[in-house]
Length: 351
Ligand SMILES: NC(=O)c1ccc[n+]([C@@H]2O[C@H](COP(=O)([O-])OP(=O)(O)OC[C@H]3O[C@@H](n4cnc5c(N)ncnc54)[C@H](O)[C@@H]3O)[C@@H](O)[C@H]2O)c1
Picture 1 (cartoon, rainbow, N blue to C red):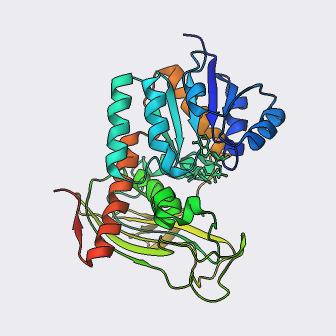
Picture 2 (picture 1 turned 60 degrees about the horizontal axis):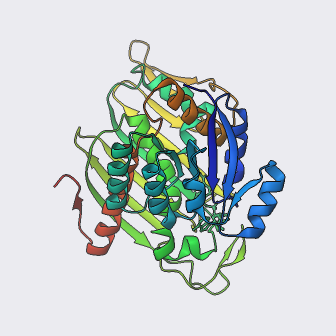
């Protein structure tokens, strides 16, 4: 097999900029084509990246027989049709998070992936940071024992996006749950070893967004046209008896500049805290606490590394580094959270 995989990237504005270095750095890939419905940004990125194959119609990029990998960086609601079209065209697909906002759409993607025999990966870049890789490797040695509880949050203080692609449910699929909840939930489930979720009890809130003068430190005055939540909390049970408390928000009177993202895991042999990357254990013989600081695995930027690992997995015949089944569990939990918030009742995920 040739080790030169040709990449076409669709949706070149925001997060795409973080993908370019990985495709350049990987020994297996060459970025050859860009696609975007916005001709201005397409031209700018083409010049920046030295790429001349520019497509205003993403279907033309997908149907280019020269391309092996399609990288999808469009707004959420376009992920499903583009992922399925690319798989049906026989391409490997890396797609930005959330893979999709509903479980049904991810199931359709899995069916298309299985039919095509190609690789599908969700761009959950936090897994690929040097800190996360070090913590995962340590946890996989069994240092925490049986993980029976986790607390995870991604909380922003006045740090909401302002574009309809995020604030309109028909475009985004949801608020901070779908935007940033997928990050911390994916990371937590991965560290816990993907226990099967069986129920979720959740609440969503919108309190600050509509207040007079409400603002985002990121973009200024907040628009009033919101139909997604600004905050959510949830209690999740797993088949193995473990539990997780999840909190996400774009707007919260929380003591942080910008964003506070943390994951605490508690096992019967030890605990851990991320991103500080400490392992917390007891020596019962000496009745002492032991806090061990982990050394990060590498210094490669996480988005770049996710692209490189994706290509590496294709070339070496390894499984997808972030399989769609794992994203399906993330979205089943968040979908259950929304349904629980609507009904005020716990929602079963195993029936
Ligand atoms: N992993 C992360 O940390 C991270 C950060 C930001 C965004 N994201 C995800 O990346 C995706 C894109 O977000 P963004 O902030 O880069 O958005 P963006 O609006 O900055 O860029 C999206 C681009 O897609 C283009 N586009 C829209 N419809 C299209 C279509 N039908 N065909 C081709 N191109 C089209 C737009 O013109 C735009 O250039 C979202 O799914 C978002 O959740 C991930």
